[in-house]
Length: 151
Image (cartoon, rainbow, N blue to C red; front, side):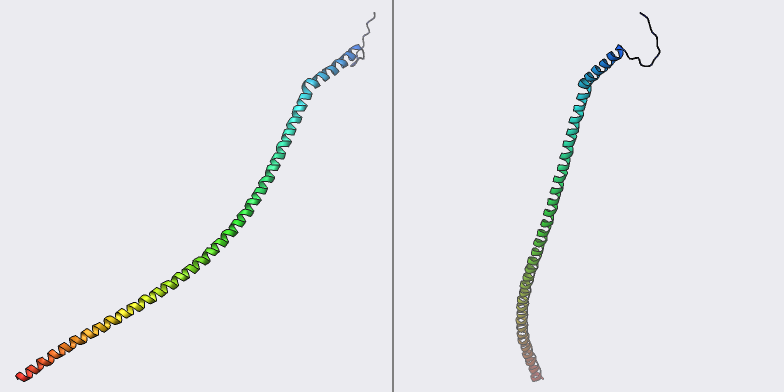
């Protein structure tokens, strides 16, 4: 056997075939042991992230719908409150006008009674004063007559 010595970067012989089979076997094993589980995990994670993203979008849509409903209900409640407030104001003004009317009537009645009482007291005072004046005048006349008859 003769040894041939050649210097080459790649020599094509049985070792290359063995190396190629070894590489393919290593690649198949590496694919089954590492790459496929990692891809499956990445795929599951991506599916999970997509599901979460869809849930978030669904929650955002639900939130926007609820916010719109709340806004609509708030507007209707404000309108109802405004109507009730106006109604209460109208009723209050009516009640106030009625109360003021009753009070004015009562004031007029009290004023009339006070005027009558005052007039009665004035009449009584005049009668009393006239009676006293008559009595005093009679006494003065009697006194003057006595002084004249005594003189």
